[in-house]
Image (cartoon, rainbow, N blue to C red; front, side):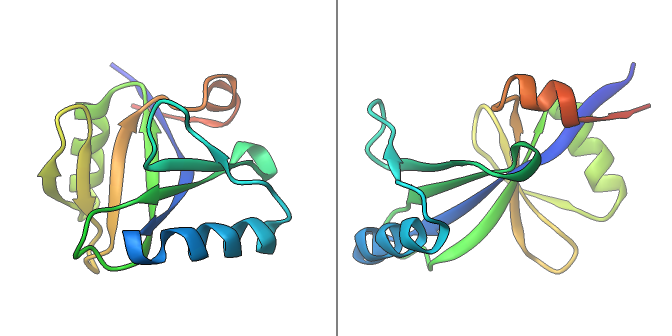
Length: 128
């Protein structure tokens, strides 16, 4: 059965000691306000950019280096994980409701459920 997915979110993973300065920097660099998520103090959003591409800021735990990672959103997580494994990705961590994976070079990315609503519907690719 076909499923859909799209590369949709760039996350700036910032440990606590860099979170405020990094958030302020990226808000200034993009000309956007970093809107906090009132349900989770670890998240803020710089919003939607071209073609519904989102940039989010995530406060990570101690010991996680500052990094960027992307999320691939999908309407079928197991099917998308299998498709990406066939392309050379590996499963890194089962996060319960999503998978943290590694590309062939070891870069972290996540396969998540639909996060962007109508933007997903407009821009997702369909896979057999």
